Amino acid sequence: MILTGPEIVKQREAGHIIIEPFTPEQITPNSYDFRLGEEIRKYTVPVLDPRQEMPTEIVPWEDNGTTASMILHPGTVYLAQTLEIMGSRDSNRFAPMIKGKSSIARLGLFVHISSGLIDPGFVGQWTLTLHAVQPVRVYRGMLIGQATFWVLDGAPVDRPRALKSKLEKEKSDGYQPFNG
Amino acid sequence: MLTGEQIREGVARQTIEIEPFDEKQLGPCYYRYRLSDTFAIVRPEWSLSEPPKEIAYHRLEAQGQVLEPGKVYLFNTWERIGSATYTMSLNGLASTARLGLFVHIAADLGHTGAAHKWTLELTAVQPVRVYPAMLIGQVAFFRPSGKIVKYQGLYSNHSKPMPNLKNFNGDHGR
Image (cartoon, rainbow over all chains, first blue to last red; front, side):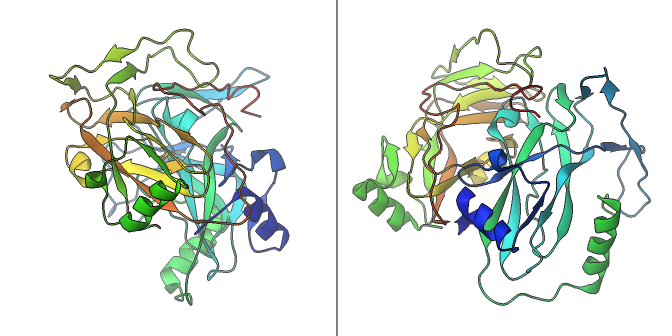
């Protein structure tokens, strides 16, 4: 089952869901609209190789004093993060899933690349993988995607240690590119 | 997630709207929807900060149309689909995926309370021809948990493929 907007509010008030900062206006019928965070990175190597180090660099914002924005180009995977810290510490209660916002989709901007599921129990800024089908300008702090919460059934499986430490690292560093 | 049989019952009880409805399009846990015969091509000058000033709609003729990689084509579902009881998810068919064709751009969620011909964002990995009314995707229905608030957003009740209508550098951005 997917939580309705009012149920997300209720579960947050009960402490079972974390969304910080929280703005009631960002609640929708079935989700919470989240914002684009401060840092956007891209890989600096021409070929991505998951068995090699894959260094990244920060892509700078164009800041005109009132708005910070940048153009995302096709052919590049951008690693971004949500402005909000989100999740549920009770790993047996909810599985969060990232969903795109249809307005963003209508301009050809992917906010995840066929992997919308967030591990139950993870609380932090969610990594977004932005991919533009054609060039598109994004704005710092804009609404970029939606968080949905799905009710889990049954007892949780204890997460493998490697994943736990990855998640703890992610909690402190904000996001991690894949390294396997 | 509802089974195909529950979707059929939902249509009969009017908790689900699918119009036109054809039982042959029911799957084990979804309904297969068709592609519209109207589309628009996303223009390079369109942005996230204002709705486009004008939209050119094209007709998808019976001989079909080749979609080119690197472009986004706004189509919609042939059927009017919706529910004030369930939440929906619209995805591609496995056969569509095998052609390297996306039918949405990470935005599969259909909010409870919305009922319309859903806009699809088609984008192709390699050139691929599409035809009007071809089976293109599947819609699944989920029972939501909690008090239902019906969707009353900007994209309600459209019968044509719709571009972005929001300003993410203004009201909808900050």
